[in-house]
Structures are given as structure tokens and as C-alpha cells.
Amino acid sequence: MSANTNAIEATLPVQAKFPKSIPYIIGNEAVERFSFYGMKAILAIFLVSQFNYSDAKSNATVHLFIALTYFMSIVGGLLADWYLGKYATIFWLSLVYCAGHFCLSMFDTQVNGFLFGLLLITIGAGGIKPCVSANVGDQFDHTNQSLISKMFNWFYFSINVGSFISTLLIPLLNDRFGPKVAFGVPGVLMALATFIFWLGRKKYVRVKPSGFPKENFIFINAYMFRTFFTKKKGESVRKITEQKYSAKSIEGVFAVWRVLSVFVFIPIYWALYDQSGSEWVLQARDMNLNFLAVTWLPSQIQAINPILILAFIPLFSYVIYPGVEKMGIKVTPMRKIGTGFILLAGSFLIIAFIQTQIDQGLKPNIVWQIFAYILLTASEILVSITGLEYAYTQAPKSMKSTIMAFWLMTVFVGDLFDSLVNNNISHHGFLYPLEGSASFYWFFLAILGFVTVAFIIISRFIKEKSYLIESEGALTANEAKATNDGLLEH
Image (cartoon, rainbow, N blue to C red; front, side, top):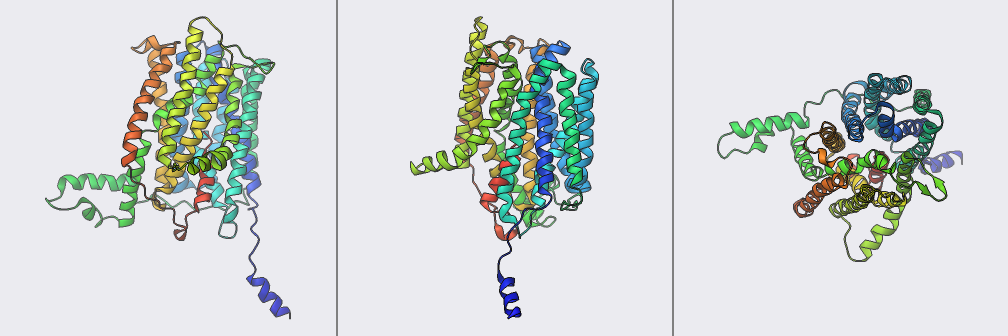
């Protein structure tokens, strides 16, 4: 009887349980994102008010800060994958991160010390950025893989709740108690985030670094480039390359180039999107900030974005996309991205209208910016989540990290472009006439319009090839989407 019972119990499925490390990861991410977005919320206005930066110089600094943060994301990811592993990379760079926050608080009246603090934060925040989400995935195995979608929902929820609260609170602290407190609180919370992460050190599943891969995207492309000029007439570059590198790796390289044909259009999206955390904030100073019987601070308005994201994800997934499909229109990644570009243009049309009113000496109500944020956030759902999912599904397993690096590069290039434009304006360059006028936004709208038309035309010829195969150990489609939702912490 006992033997039969044991045999029956052995055949029953084991109930999936969340890894014991998850509470530490969720707690760390929520507090870390609070510290980052709280600091970032007041950065543009602080540089103007404290160090007498012009609006253009402040915007240039903020965009360069974001660009460097995303560049360091690539460095941090490679460091974790090849040499240190994710845990060590996250822990040690988190200490650098804490030191950066400390400098912001201590050197709030010394520009060089403050800028050094920003540099440390780019290294710390950027370096851990690609490791945190990947570390979440490492905690799951075949016994609980079904829970990964729920896990990333909580992970993403914690990111946006942290962002929302900090974007409301930190500007208020800055207004009431000054920059030492306003920058000091995110620093204390980053130290707390690091401590929470350290507490879970014995519970994490740690994947060992793989070492430097010999068959990587750069080496294979360089070899193919040389082969093109040295091969004999009639010889195939691909076949010659297969004598040195595996066919699987070479196919991965071609897959990456297919994805890059989409990614080449994305930097202009971030160039406009990230102005919501700098140019839009400075614009809000000249608006009527009375809304819902409350007088808001200019830096607080951007808090609407994370709340809208939490509302829009289920709205688009369960209402809008199915509704469009029922109308006989197939919802494809290319159509989502194209529509996202159009919505982004709509948000900037509103911003340009607001600036025209300000140029005329009027004070339009902040509700106009809220309308712009609604369109901006909708575009984020369509472009950012879709771009991440497209990157994951269109690349083979061996090239998924490479693709994610290129995705981060789109943000780097977009914000670098913003920084260069604002830097030219601040130095009275040829773009100086754009300063403080609606022409600034029309300039970016013109570029976006050109890119959008080009994307709509070219996207029709872009071939898609999904590599999302469960038999090779990849996630299911829903789990991949959940993973990419979790990565959306821009």
C-alpha cells in the first residue's frame, strides 16, 4: 500500500514555487529605481537654478548623462557575462552607484564634484542595468519556469511604483529642504538597495561567466569583410567564413543585421522621448501648474508616465490589440512601431503648440502637457516593449545578448544626438536660433517625420524570422514578452 502511494505521488506534478531569492531582487529593484528616478526628476532644473546653466546647457548635460548610462549598460553586461558574473557586477558597481549619490549630496554647490558624482552614477546605474533583469531569469529552472511571467509583472510593477513615488516626492523635498536632502535621500535609498541585494547573497542562483567568446559578432563580421576583398571570383563569402566559424554563429550574425535594419530607425525615437525628462520639465516652469486644485512643481508632472504605463500595458494587450485584430487588421511589430512613431509626433505637436503659446507671453495650463504625456506613453508601449520583444524573438540564442546591446545603443545614440544639439545651442552655434522657441520642437518633429516615412516604406521589405524555439531552451512567447516588459525600465 505504501509503495503504491509513493509511486502515485512520484507521478504527480510538483507545485511550482517562486525562488527564495525573488523578494531580495524585487526589494532591491524597487528601491534602486526610486533612487535613480528621484535624482533624475530634479536634475535639469537643479543645474539651471544652482549652477546657472542655460536651459540648453542643462539639457545637454542631462542627455549626455542618459547616453553614458546606456553606454555603460553595454560595458556592464559584457563584464558580467564574460568575467565577473552578474552578482559580483551588480554588487561592486552598486557601491560605485552609492558613491555617486554621495557626491551629488555633498557637492551640491561645487559643479566639478557634482559632475563627478553624475559620472559615477552612469557607471553604477548603467553597469548594473542589463544584469538585474537577466539575474531574475537565472533564478528560474524547469520546475518553476511557468511563474516567470508573474515574476516579471511584479518586477515591472515595482519599477514603476518606485519611479512614480520618487518623481512626486523628491521634487517636493528639493523645494522644501533643498538639494542636499533631495539628493541625499536617493543616496540613502541606494545604499539600502545595495544592502537588500547583499542580504540575498546566499540565495541567488549564480551563472558563471562564460569568458570571452571567440565566435562573436565583431570578429565574424571583420573576417567576412576581409574575405570579401580577398576571395576569388565566384567564391562565396559565407561558405569561406563557414570554414573558420560555425554555421550557427554565422546565421546569428545575419539575424542580427536583419534586426539592425529595424533598430537603425529607433535612435530618433529616444531623442524625442527623453526630452520629457529635461526639455519638457523646463518648459513646465512657464506654464500654469494648477491642476486638480493642486499647484504642482515642474519636476512632478513627469510622474504621470509610470502610472500610465501600468494602466496602458493591460489596456493594449487585452483591449486594443485584440480589438484591432477583430477589425481584420493584423497587429505586427512593424505596424506597432510605425504607429508609435506617429503617436510620438502627436505628443510633440502638443509640446510645440505649448511653446508657441509661451513665446507669445501666455501661460497655458499644465493639462496640455498631460495630454502630451498620454500620447508619449502610448508610443512607449508600442515602440519600446515591441522593440525589446522583436529583438528577443528575431535573434538566435547565441546572439540575444548582442541584440540587447544594440538595443541599448539606440538609446545611447538618441540621447547623444540630443546632447550635441543642445551643446551647439549653448555655445551659440548654428542651431542657436532654436533656443527657447517652438522651432526647437519643430526641428525634431521634422527629423522624426522623415524617419517615420522612411520606416513605413522600408519596413515592408524587412523579413522576419523567429528563433523562439522552446526545444532549444528558449522561453515561450508569453514568457519572452513578460521578460521584455520587465526590461522596460527606461
